[in-house]
Length: 259
Image (cartoon, rainbow, N blue to C red; front, side):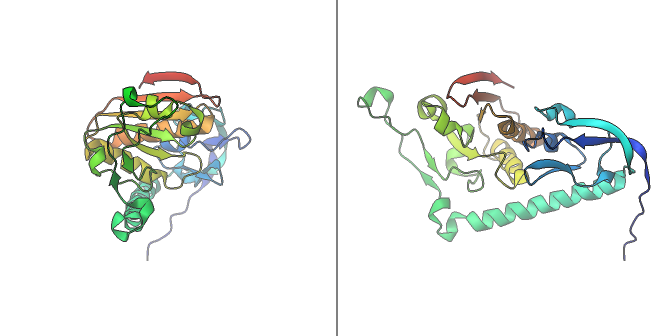
């Protein structure tokens, strides 16, 4: 039987999260190398004091200034416990990926997950006045349902879009989706962030995508999707160009640049 290690309390530096300012975007979770933070009930929280080293690497990722380092009585930082914690996270990620793949495999016959490749859309010169053709080339599109090894991702230019961008930006198909394969996600409401990071890594390493464009809304929580893309790219062995586009709630492009 494994002996439980006793942790003593002392006055030390530790992260403090202002729940009123926190939007639950999850940027800080990605930035924390020790896995001390997790989004729970829409707010970032410290899962265990012994995982927080008090260095504050997570602060730079917060767009709302909800994080700060303070000194207070807290359990001592435990590096060995952090290593065990990170290993357990990796194991859980693997289990989640296997479960999602099993649940949403097209072999199960579920229409929402069945892999489909569409015919090339009409060129813009052939469009009848008043009719806007779809630029969608594939199915499925939701991140939990996609298979990164699907044929339409191979060597493709990929658009990773926040759900709301397709409703906010009027020329989404023509300007964003045209000649791209797509995956959509909501960084605030979707579960399984680790699964998304692994799928982005797989798109880069296994599908060998050409470029990755991340379309997000101007709202703070949406920045978490760019953070997920950057984390997945960091875990990949290949390097691909990443561009991000920020769309306003009124459907205007506020920013468009390569990172």
